[in-house]
Image (cartoon, rainbow, N blue to C red):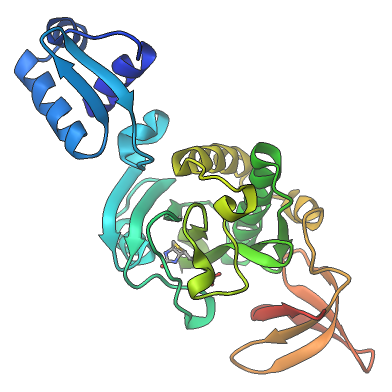
Length: 308
Ligand code: BTN
């Protein structure tokens, strides 16, 4: 109902909408309208109330489910969580539908790749998408590549930001990290039961307190950007991108945005450290590395550092 009220108010924000008309239009009592308006005001929506009715003056940059009308029922919104990955895993194990999205304003224990911390202060975008692709586990990495491809495209197309991808899924701008991505999956009998992709995007937060070599959309553009716009654009484009389930085209497209290929890199994994030239990725997304002695290694996992 809050979303419906907001949409009516926003359609004609120069008008004052009487409680009477709202109640008839939306099929609920005037008292119910009044209660929802009060709650919306508490949530940061500036709605002027007078004897003649209600007028929407401004909306906060909030990520409440009703801000995403096309997918309201699949959004799980939290003010504060430890990690959206944990909530998403619980939901996935309870059979939540494909493309359920868990969003948090702040994370107290945000997780990065290779057991790192992902600092998640207010102003950033922190969310995990639960996917249920009908694919074998060896194809899941393509979904991470699809997500980073779509993020890079979204940054370029809608914000004029020259975003590039560092293997496997970091989004960098001028070598500074703008977004990170983390995946978790469970499979039964060679069939994926769920694949959760967690994404952190530095939007209006300042990540440089903890990560000097990071940046944000606000820092790049010199102005704050509505997070709901970023999320909406990304979710719509990502859903469209993965509608072809086996993602046969995705690695080819991803390479157009990749800055790792052709570079001298160091790959650090829990097992070892490798140095060489990143020459390509194979059709599972593994990195093909040409070592100094001319031998070729296939790297499936690790942290990638570009040599200057
Ligand atoms: C990385 O670059 O190391 C991956 C960062 C992933 C961060 C996101 S924020 C939303 C989701 N919840 C988490 O705890 N982590 C991911």
